Length: 128
Length: 223
Image 1 (tube, chains in turn orange, green):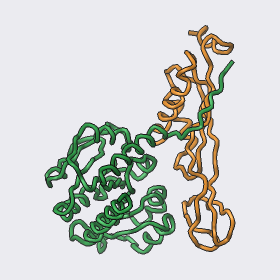
Image 2 (cartoon, chains in turn brown, blue; image 1 turned 45 degrees about the vertical axis):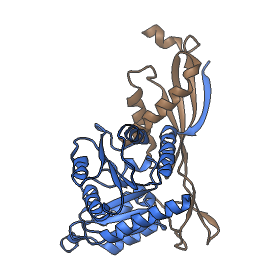
Image 3 (cartoon, one colour; image 1 turned 90 degrees about the horizontal axis):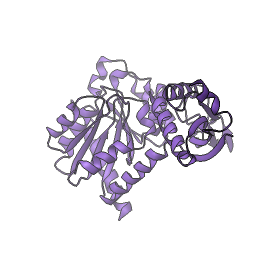
Image 4 (cartoon, chains in turn red, cyan; image 1 turned 60 degrees about the vertical axis):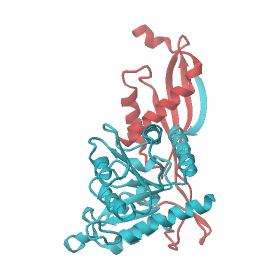
């Protein structure tokens, strides 16, 4: 459910970005997702498929660029990885609060757009 | 040839822009805005009813209620004499800033000091959507179990205030309050945790004092 609404936002923003490029279809959309963004890449890709099914952009793919969490411990003066399966904001070594400096990404990076009438775009229309 | 269009924008940019406009509007009105998030049935509306009874005489309050269906929650707040608008999401699991903007544009609320936005009952999805609030409040009733902060970390990590509700049930359920305090502190070192019961009134005065304090702080910062 959550990923579907995020996929809708991605779709809306992708279509808006190619609005000035004439008719055509989306081929691939690339997003950055951080480990602390509470988004599951597989569910997001599945939501994308479901969302584009039956529309002009059916068959387009959603690529996810994964960004690991970056958490810095001032006391240890070192980056600390997120321990598996938890969201603890405490240093695994000294127990002090960590500064989260990365891993919250949820960004639309770029879109590959196939204008109608260009090479590669014709195959689909021949079938139809 | 395929064209590559560079975008580099937040996926939720449209929501974030709407939230920024709301935040400006709330700042101009010198109003404090809370976004209440919890699972269904943890007592968001009941806490608000107790809050309205305690604070209604001193502050001008308003409510926006998010639900999939029914006007029940807004009716409950209106019955206590405060303006309230129901947003029916029709299936969506969270509110977004565009829906709140629509309400603010169309509802013509009388001026308010504090606006409570009660999100759709869900511990997961509402966490990602900024509604222009000053802070998020996570509610957890003691009947839900004492492992929830670690199981649903995003909301407990992002909520400035966690309110434990239905504390009157503590003698009847297995709920380790200290364990929950420890989990919330680990996820959210700067967050506050309050223990309340709308039924007995426990903690309601502290909760209301916190709201008044945050409102005063916001107004001083703007002055």
